[in-house]
Image (cartoon, rainbow, N blue to C red):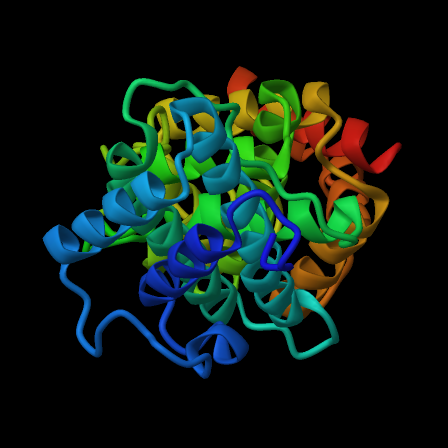
Length: 310
């Protein structure tokens, strides 16, 4: 794009320089080039410069739009590859991943703000990642970022941004739904450790529809037990229990519960109660606890047996 024999190298170079302001510090090679257009970004000035450069290169709307898409595609590969470093290794940090992907989304917004100066009347294909990252890395970054929308108190991670990231990563709606369910399962297991305190005030937030009883459910599982089962004597209403059963069914039907996650559930129960969940089920059966359980509680116990293959 910047080679002397390219269609409009001066226009592409200016566009790349202006785009660096959408992700400060992420493009040191471009930022170190001579003749940067300005020290502080100004949208009106940027549009004027791009419009003039386009005119000087005698580009049609279609040619200008094609150059724009090509430059953005090249640059977005760099910042997504940088973001992927946050999901690799054992010490990966979800917050670092969310922050890194937020930089990507800021860059996308910045690029979109410049497009009308390049070719306002042309429709281009959505920008998609064309780098060498593995699909699993892209899906992991998407899961973390999409999941963070439920916890985004400042509104920085919006559904529109999640939808845009899904397009950039080329993830289908069905796959995105499965990834979100899987991430929700992991969140639930983590919340079991603190009795569901992390769910306080989250009812009604985007992505939490139908989760109104989750705090009570987690308190029962992680801090107070389960009605009708030996050693699990916390309080949970029938309504909350029904929601628990419904969610577990949905997770099973979606195929989102892997063997590794089931093993994690067992381990967390073992940490909290000092015995494996399978032992609790066996104990409940042996002591005839089933006779004292409600239909909903009996259904939940049956779900545990189904999930664990008992």
